[in-house]
Length: 137
Image (cartoon, rainbow, N blue to C red; front, top):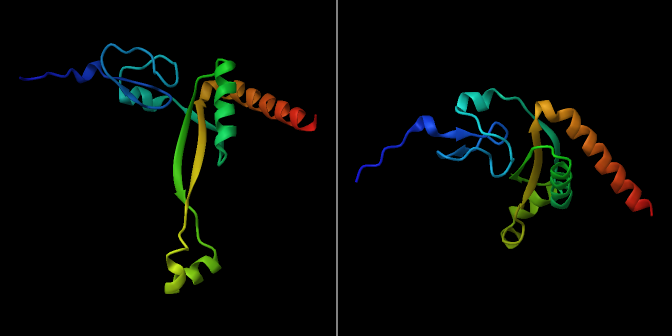
């Protein structure tokens, strides 16, 4: 059996840059219309509006942007934490090396289309103001 794939039918998300097969017209994550080529998707400017290491804040920001109708993409990555001098010292001693391991840190970022950046910054300010008001009461 030979399967022919029409690579011109592959669509791309201009925000998260994900590939979609023929017949899909909107990104399932970002909820925005797809474009016809990878070059077209790459040409759409994207801005990082928030970065941090707190999963709950990351999720709340994505939720706030969704409620405000701002297309956004959340990215998660692991980073190695640099060792402290004591950690380095203890890791070379055989008795401690099994117990002293560096653990990766999770890093989160929220991206938006550059055209949505002012709305996203405004929504982010409102988010932080609401959190500050809730912690005072």
